[in-house]
Length: 126
Image 1 (tube, rainbow, N blue to C red):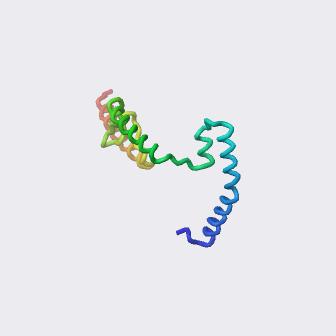
Image 2 (cartoon, one colour):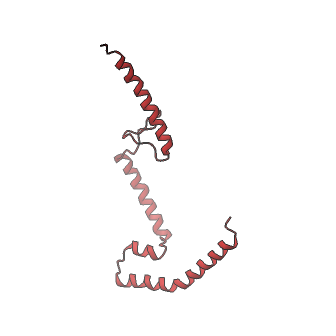
Image 3 (cartoon, rainbow, N blue to C red):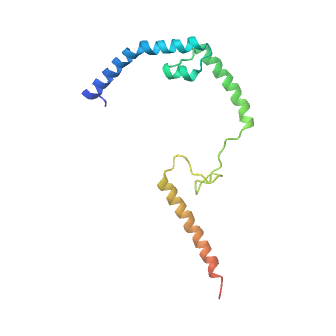
């Protein structure tokens, strides 16, 4: 896919635009870093792709592994979900479920609840 003449032309033009704007982006990046030696990473990430050096990345992974072991003791992230209704403890459906499925399950639940109420109402005599 994406082999049509139009897409090839658009890809070519995007490359041309990148070449044209590259010096301007570089100057903007240099000005940000020059003005504020402690520049915010958000500003830099808008302009350029930030790549973390490998040796620093390895250190971070080691630190994260140690922190994960400690965090397991503190937090319990297990979601308790009813297998029949698929509702969690807060009454929320899973993220992946679409509105139509939610509506069907809700209608099924209310139908069952309605039957039980109807039986209770029959017990009253006038």
